[in-house]
Length: 296
Ligand code: PPS
Image (cartoon, rainbow, N blue to C red; front, side):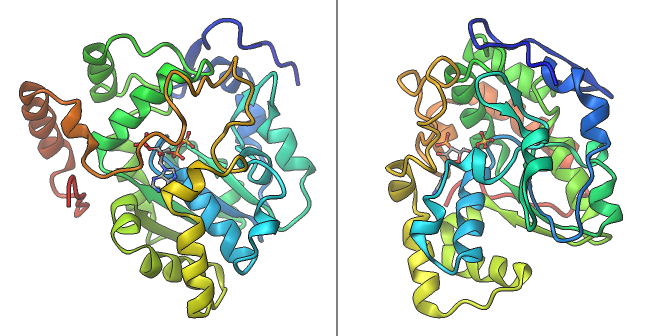
């Protein structure tokens, strides 16, 4: 597979079936769509910046029964191939996944309709983590600023409009969370919320353990809660993306582990933006049964 983008310029984007994607993902789309899942694959799926890395760290600690040394074996993106991510200085998530022995835990940000069909054909377990869209937007904006593997975000006002109109990589937040929500009962999908994990991590980690098929005693659960807290993960080079070359992710612009809070959107949204967001949200989310917490 040819990896053209080398990080000296900002990533370009294109469309796959109406969804914006980094150009290398578009160029390799046929191979991504044909990805061969295995029945014992576990897939972690999120809209970007919804708590993927947090979920990955928790899952790895559950699978390793709280053994922190085992989870320090490699950085997040090496432990969990990101199937549609192709970066020259880092490699192809697809090739990495294909070379990995089973059982594999994989990552994707794809909306449900773009999920390679073999995941459903093989009845793989899928964990979906969703985050309230206002904090998700803020997090994504800052990630665009620091990550050259995404286009430049423009001004805050411009990015706000791009997010609302779904003109960002991986498409509309609203369509993403709704698509996976509607699919959850027909497939082996555990649908989780970032705000629940923040509010009661032990409860949510136990739920994850049951879904994965691991019964965890209280002391292991407490250990996992501690090692996956924001402050501990921020200091963990295997979980904070500091191993990615600085020409791709520049943490001096905005750290990957930025704030990890619920309600930070209040420091960014103007009153007018908030009213516009709420009006749009109510219209697009009406009747879905999906509710998000925007603050505690
Ligand atoms: S990515 O690039 O899509 O994989 O990013 P993702 O991991 O989904 O999202 C990054 C945001 O999640 C926050 N984060 C956490 N919050 C709370 N606790 C823990 N342990 C944790 N780990 C990561 C991270 O700080 C990003 O959110 P913001 O709001 O930008 O801080």
